[in-house]
Length: 261
Image (cartoon, rainbow, N blue to C red):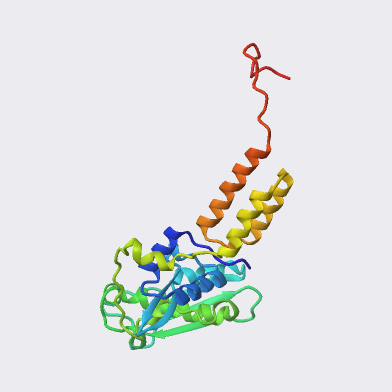
């Protein structure tokens, strides 16, 4: 499994919007989580939040659904709500928030369904935002997250949705434009020794085959180089290739360049 490589522009977007306030080590941990889960941070399937100097990596409900669907074993789901009377209904029409939501997940090959039940009082942190506007939808997502983890523990162990985590601590994330100089330390500098060795090898190459061999080695060591270093080596290789290939004879003025051989 190859390591995730983000461009400098993507690193800036992650540092300022998707994982704000994270250190370099925390960004590496976040990159590993993206790699392990196969989730796309730029689609808001996974993101990170600092809670009291502690990194919390969370997924959206879409991220959990994506992982479950990717297994090829998800076989449908259904959600119900109930009030204080404990009577379950497949649609919530009450004027006040439901007391609980229950989601049932079916998995192919399993002899029984998996059920996740979430109580509204356990998850409604402050009755603000979407919890006040769409309480039935919010508690339904929490129950679905519970059911999905029960259904696919190997794939979803340790992954919690942001809707579930809101009851733990109220967090306000402010998106700000990060100045370019402040982002410089976040950029991967690359291995200077590998870069220097690549430049020397290209300069010493005397045949096209040698350049092709060097290009193959460059691909293998790509993760040790910054994007700028890799692009520089590529340009040097192309320049050296031009030097090694003799120019083609120019066609005479009478020749038709489009004529058939």
